[in-house]
Image (cartoon, rainbow, N blue to C red; front, side):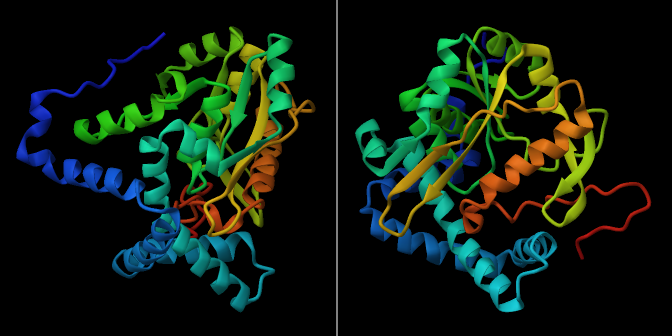
Length: 310
């Protein structure tokens, strides 16, 4: 089922050009063993420092929140921005938790709601397309879910082979196997065989034949992939949204699996994109400060329309 070469650790990855990555991974591993409250405070500090250095990302967060929530007051927007910056730094630590924590520690920190929906569909032999969003703690959510119901991960190989090795190993820990994100045939085969497939249609992947414009929050035309329709229409899989939420600074998380989207508009890519964006909005609003607002979600615009970013 694997349609690409699984990354392996070779001596060439010890070359000095990869030392920065090896140091980063080593630091992540060590930090993952700190008590959670220390990781939480360090994460906040990292986020605030990073946004001072990466001012363009700070502006992207600010603009995305202004575009999506124009009804919020300036004070409310600023509060959401500040919370999101803290969560951006914590994402590094949550990724380390996902990749390096032992199973028992993950299970102790993550409560899962709605597994019965997955079990019911699997008993019927249905493939399940998990509709994910790029929350800051998605890696940890995927790890926790996979410990209970292993599935198939959609994987984008990293350009850096050293980082790619550790990223792959971290993600495959609780997945049956990984598929390259371009391997549509592999995805369809898995879904037709009743597998659970992770899929995140919430970002701007650029304009092309597999995209359309659909509303997302207050933005009337957000470039949205039609890959969701392609996978569901061709496989008969059932879309199931979920959200990963950090409940507080105590280190307790809730992974919420929502009811299957049984009224999905089949054979209608435009309507499906609008429908899926509504489901994405619902998932984001479970914890809006924990979403990856630093992504330029609205960078692709309809022809002749100006950029929404400065």
